[in-house]
Length: 228
Image 1 (tube, helix red, strand yellow):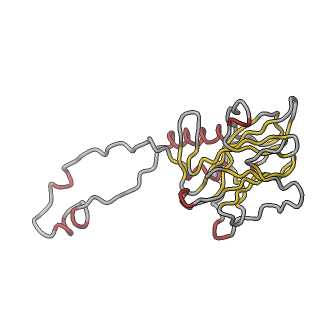
Image 2 (cartoon, rainbow, N blue to C red; image 1 turned 135 degrees about the horizontal axis):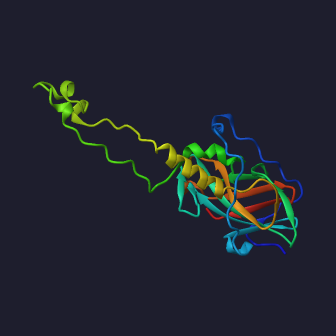
Image 3 (tube, helix red, strand yellow; image 1 turned 90 degrees about the vertical axis):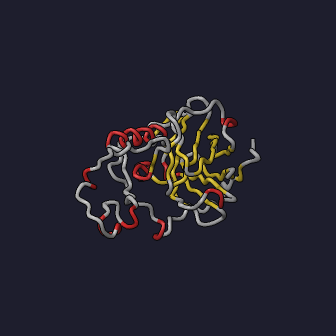
């Protein structure tokens, strides 16, 4: 049965193009072994957008620069995520890969899906804050009267220099595990199965007017029109 929110291109589908060299995402570092996946929603219609690829129904929701996980939302500035769920008749299995998905934003060239390991170094927890630095007056004990810009340990005009603080190793490891558990599993899988697919996009979500999720894989071919 056709679904209104999807434009299928079963015949003559153009394969997703490669990301332009100037927009090539950085390589993955310390890529964990396997993605775990999310709990599929009850039915494909529980996702805002649905489409058909052969006997497989795909449900999807565009999440922007948010990385939803069971323990709360994370964020990423350089990537966008699409939560996907794949459903089929009882006993259906399918070989999954992030390479089966591509994203077309505002009618421009398609951007291929990337492995979640590439995203790890760009993920942040909006609720995490660095600990307050210990206050000390020792740096002021040897000051002499003069130009504040030369004598003050705070730097020019008496302002503290802004030094970005990275999360501790254990915090970053926990974030990586949360992304790993939410990413779409790879390889031969029984349906239903669900998870996040990541795409390189550094622009503002507010400037997105049209989004198409393109699937070209073992189940068939199709295009889902997503809600920005």
